[in-house]
Image (cartoon, rainbow, N blue to C red):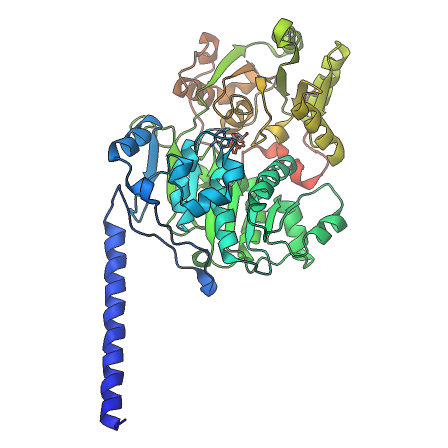
Length: 512
Ligand SMILES: Nc1ncnc2c1ncn2[C@@H]1O[C@H](COP(=O)(O)OP(=O)(O)OP(=O)(O)O)[C@@H](O)[C@H]1O
């Protein structure tokens, strides 16, 4: 070929390349600025490291064919707020049949237990399957675990067998890590090539170290994960997916440094998909959360823009009763309540009793037992094996009364908890919302009874707001403590169950 011809071809190739680049740029710009509620286009976040994880999300034809009225009705009836800085506006997946056939087939065994996706699943899946960073705020017991778990496992399985840890899910307590792991394990079983493991404090490290060999999905509490990072057992440099479950708790002062350290060992946010899920999303941690994510989509379920700017919301199927009383009257009132709620047909109803301090929980457990009830306890001073045994007994129903500290406040999915009794109010209104959220799960009804004393006065305003927002009665007595809501301090958040991850002895016990 002549020199001239070669030069001509090189010139044409260069122009072609330039044109294609321009077209791609134009397409991207168009995608960014064109909100389309019936979006039929494919969406994707480029896969880092040239690994294809199926992040190109194409809505199934059945979803595209869905009348817009059905989508609008869903968004309105579930009060779904979608805040997407890119304005992509993907349609929610309202039925399992509206997933691609590949997805529906892979997770058939998991979906078969449910009628349809829960609202947070419907709204989050399209974005998570597209590879977007994500903040999901939805009431307690609304299926957030499968909301983040299914897309994570799907995308990981699309990657194929890869060495190294690709996904990390962090949870605040050991019991919650175990529970999340059980769900993730079920999802991973659909893929055949994924090895999930669970690592948490208070148990033998050697066994966990062995289990980490060949693992690509890790569900962990932060303390033990950090331990394994520092001794070189765990290498997070290939992590593609990070989930913070109970994200506000993971980002508050108690865990902030651990989380920062863990994330610092992962690829940058542009090479990682980060998802945060929670039922409570206080303003105090939102800026920090943003530093770990890239253009996250935020979806909130159950709030109307005009009535709520993201403030605290309890599950509205829980009837909340608050009794203002003198601290000395608590034990006798507790006995009355137990008598009333275990009478007749309610004999085997599961009741969860919350205390604030470990010693208090221990004392209340013994007090209840001394009155003839079969009861178990769970708090941070107990050996991990005893904690797990108590929880198992309560879950299986062999014991129907459990006395707990806030170590059991978040995330635990215990079937058929009919009543939550707060003997002592927690340190924050957020913790209150999580505690009572142990009942009324997966669409069921629940009841929460809270003893409130003069000592809890600083939280009266926040509690009144939670009650009002859920359209619950506010007792007159509560107003006498004032309605001012103190701005939540970044470091004043559920400080008492840091123990859960450390296994340290408490130093702050002042009760009694
Ligand atoms: N689509 C669905 N339909 C009905 N039930 C579901 C669905 N998805 C999940 N569940 C069930 O709902 C229950 C609560 O789910 P999950 O524990 O994930 O809630 P959560 O939103 O994480 O709650 P929390 O905020 O308290 O952590 C579980 O028992 C789960 O199996």
